[in-house]
Image (cartoon, rainbow, N blue to C red; front, side, top):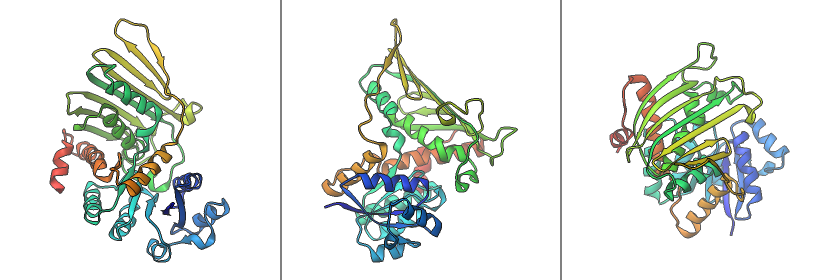
Amino acid sequence: MAIRVVVVGMGPRGQDWLREIQKTSGHELVAGVDINPAALRQACDRGFITEKQCFTQLAEALDQSECDTVLVATSPGNHFEPCELALSRGLAVMVEKPFTLCLREAVELVALAEKKGATLIVTQNYRYMRSFRTARRLISDGVLGSVGMVVCQYYRVPHAMSDSLAQLTNSILWGAGIHHLDAISYTLNERITGVLAESFTMPYGQLPRGGSMQMLLSLENGTRAVYSSTYESSGHEFFERGQEFYARYVGERATLHVFQRWLILCKNGKLPRLIRRGPRTLTEERILLDQLERALVAGEEPDCSGRNNLQTMAVVEACIRSASERKWIKPQELLDEYR
């Protein structure tokens, strides 16, 4: 029997999920929720949902629809309430990143999910992009040997983004940075243990403070990382939709370069060679929906569970505190505060 899904948030990201659910025989959309009637009408016009499936309040949708899981794709500052409501009813929840905008709320939701025995997944979908999965495989297989340093850079031109994100302090952290920090830890299979961060806006920038960030990271096996990102770059408007991403993994046996979709492996004493990522058989969203299905049907622990994502949320909060207090912050100590 198909897993019955209620989607909360009919904006662009919510409609991505509606489109993916339509393609998946194992999932059935039973309701769509948004406080904005215009967003609901647009989803109807595009054939994602019917008028009978439209609701402006999640509680009403849950009262009138039989469902197994709630997928939360609202704006970043509005994740906690729908997650709490669904989990309190014992329903599975899959929530868009960022999990919440503060670690304390994330810890509360994980505790509630575990109390109710409900599945909770956070959609850190960058983990499942082919470039990051290929890097993780090469590192796990020992091709690079021990990795001593990672350098990661992300640039994006000023662009139209949702008001809810554009108005946030540290918008780059909540938008792209949380993905990259999670991916650094995921590819290395190491927890980030220390953060020294600086949050700023370019002199010519139009965003609130935090349109750009740079940081130093320490990881549990002695790896060091340097990360910088900005939403205030320019000069590459026509390249990869205005975005540039580069990561370098420096190992004892080889260095791996990741530039957008290209991976180049430089083994010690050998010529560089291109590493193929393989075909994209499933979208990142489909991989996450499959995790949800296996959790509900077979009781399998999701790779990107709420508890797993607490580490990433602690790193993000450490970045914010470090930028404010101008000192190294240990993410695990922040987690211990709330536990």
